Length: 485
Image (cartoon, rainbow, N blue to C red):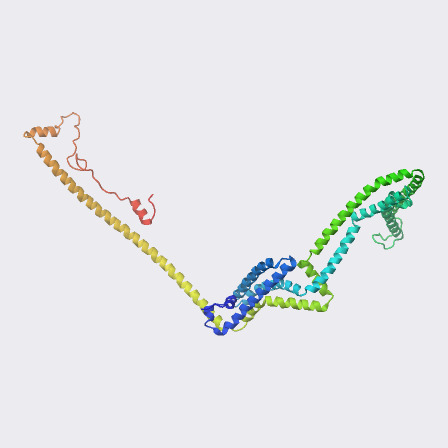
């Protein structure tokens, strides 16, 4: 009988389907649906590997083929496992959920492949935004702030050297610049505490205020912080003024010393500046490489979400295509479930009867096997009993034969002894009797030696008695099929 691959994929039995030719096309359709879903799964895996991992086609093709075979086997099992019954829906529900899950997973790479041009455009925008964000963080970070301060210091030193040791603008002096940087947070602290103290005094609904008017503890606390900040600001301003005076005095009295200090300080500043710029450049290069290589599924899904968020047509077609591929992936399960709600076809009736016959045949085979085992055990037991009885009979016969043999041997020995003794009888009978038997002992004399018996098993010259003994334990061990104890 010729086997059809689509029939095999549907899970139908070809021998039974031959008896229902009208149902052959239905099961070929189910097998075709299973083959279609597996093919789409293989293509989806190929696209996923190509987009996410940038795998070459010769590496992605074998993995896609394995995935194709896995989905093919899984869908075939799902179709075969759903059978008609009273609780068919409960049995089919978990399989339907599994099919939907695989449908979602498999349809995603296909949708991403279809909308690839729109996704690539949006990915470029995402990369540009990430670059700008990274550049801003790089400039505002610790390294960026150090570079900015060193560049200002370098410019001031170069200007001092160009002016022959005279600092043209005292505000560009590095020490004054550093003092100015300390003023900004102190001024902010002073202003914040002044505002908070005013809110506490007036009772306005300010943020974090007690909303009670009057000079209470909170007001005094804010005023103390304000006065402390003002004190530090005055000290810094005084330091700035003193530095200005020093610069002015120094520029008039020791230009050569200022020029020498500037020339000594400049190489160190430039070295630090070069090292920090190199660090910043390395970070920039590493980010650009990572940003260019970010072409995985997550960034593509993000790009598709952003592209479809502002475009109704794109969003609609995205949903429709996603649902289409998902339904195609679940098609074998849907067809099988819909088939359960119709009347049983000829093949299903034949399969049910075949299953019943198989169950009956299996029970009969099991019973026959048990009966055969019982007969075999009974036969072995009968053989063992017959063997024991035969051995007992053989033992009796062997004992009788041994007794007859001993009787004949004893008779022959007795006859030979008789002839010998007759030959030994001398002419004087009294002498023979005296030499053969001891005289009767007198009263009180020692007991005479025991004369060996003339007959019996211990008689001189008689063969020892032999009687084979049959051990009862050995006989039982033999019957039971084990070694004797």
